[in-house]
Amino acid sequence: MPRCRSSQAEFPSPVSSDMAESKALPLVILSEQFAKLPGIGMKSAQKLAYHVMSMSDGEAKAFADAILNAKKTVHLCSVCQNFTDKDTCPICSDVRRDKSTVCVVEDPKDISAFERTKEYKGVYHVLHGLISPMEGKSPDDLKIKELLARVEPEGIKEVIMATNPTVEGEATAMYVSKLLKPLGVKVTRLAFGLPIGGILEFADEVTLYKALENRNEI
Image (cartoon, rainbow, N blue to C red):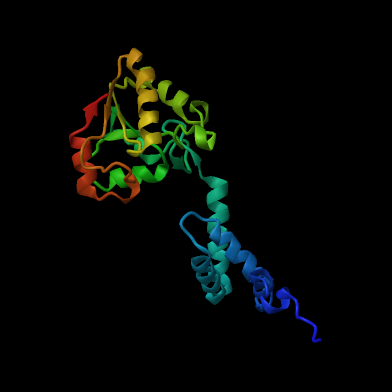
């Protein structure tokens, strides 16, 4: 009676098959690092890793140095908590900006979205996240205390809550609003133009401008 081959031999595991591929380990590690970036899948990460290999030594060094230099020199603005390499960011340092109006956003990248409209003349405050119990993010993890500390010294009259129109964004806007109102600050929310579940980073200039123009008090 002939011996049966094992099921493992007939159906090799994906792990064994993958390990059989001849790839240089440093290239695999580089791909894995790229894959850790938001929005980058493994296929895209591999393309980026192979692109790095096509760079000259000088280009690769400049790329690596740019990453290290950014990590070393960029920190939070002492006023608005945006990223900067100075004590205060260019927007906070600009005397032409209206310091009495503050637009509160979740991430630094949201500021770039508003600046593209070329219509907003106030300043900003970055929370660096949203209240999210599911992700373990509490109000103490956000830059809310820093916002409250700005109200009196800067003579802030209006705070525009520009967090994304998601469950977490709405909850954060309401929480901050309750803290600001006793301080005599008008708190508004971005109005129509931004769909529920939408992301500010991907909104076009006209949509953001209309949302700013038609903001509502909360």
